Length: 108
Image (cartoon, rainbow, N blue to C red):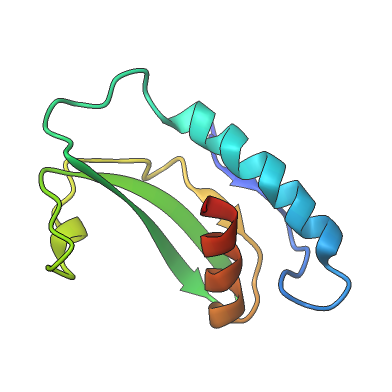
């Protein structure tokens, strides 16, 4: 069963894509409700979103749970003990900075 939420090949971050942002605002919470367990594993202390991919093929948003959280350490989220890997939120291809800014604004 494929559990990724997909926005398809629609461009994001370009003029006239305001409708796409509305779709993302609905789909990201739906994806989170689908992938988050009722209870996170006891080892999870911190949560972080990871955005990976590239402008040509698109991006994937994953959520990871970590055994620690330290805002002074930029690598605190590198040691995950839980993740949504395999159940990622897929975003279409586009400019990296624009995609990152869009995801940050939607997650706030």
